[in-house]
Length: 371
Image (tube, rainbow, N blue to C red; front, top):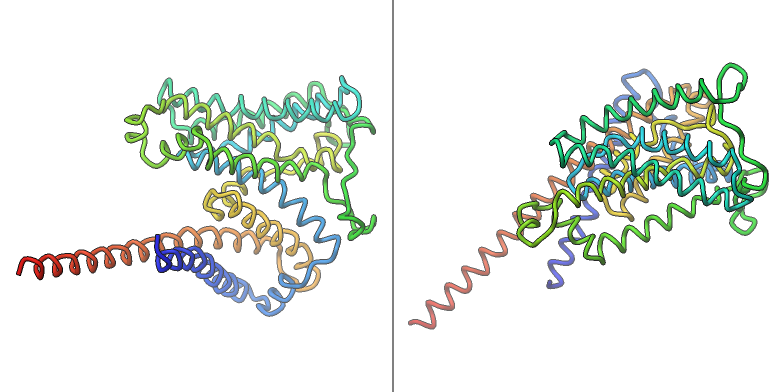
């Protein structure tokens, strides 16, 4: 690969996000203006440097959105659509909360047990869709959507039957003090009053590094990428498609099971009102935004977390509904997908022109040699 090709590829990788960002800014500004609000006040609030407390919230949200995005990205790389991440982490979070609340093991061993349970439950719930696809030909989109509804109903029933009373609702048994993780403050950069970054946020970093190595540096990762790109070619090279489908769904569900655990052990302590829903659906958008690559997913998770946290004071300081940020997030995803496709086609056209020029030069040299 020559220097010109490298520059072209880097330019394409940078150009698409810039086009998408500019488009999202313009569309959001138009929507805010049509709604009768001040565009300048909207962007002034959104671009205000976050306080230390806001930075803590952004980092904490980023860790959960990154896990959700990587769960979706694993399936996407296999050309599968795991729409069931929401149900997988919901059921996994409930089961982990029950195990941790029972305190069958002392101290931090209780945390480890809950993490294992969450991964197993998430993997099994996603694996059901994988098995249905390879044995009965059921689309994973349909099966995972149905499994989302089943998980929500099942957890609601279990809470009503076996949960503890908590005001107007129900909850699992709170975990003991010895199993709670206080978090950290970046060597004193954040004061106690600013909150703490959840300890299990480090799980997101570990997951990102491990998956990057597995997908890009192992035979399994090669088989996964090959099957997602061209299943016929993968079969010809000896890859078991059905096995890869089930394994990919199991791996995706296992990562999905971890999504809420940083918040659970950081400041939730039980499954109930503290549970944060819709992270699974947001993770699908984050994966698309990050092009299913760990670094890209991390950037997408940070952007979505930034938008969510910065939207909180919109109603107070600019009299604008924070829900407008959801529109911004949707526009960003659609713009990124469209921009990458435009840039990709531009790159293909450039390569084709280069090949034609090279062939023409070769033809002229051959004619000159024959003469």
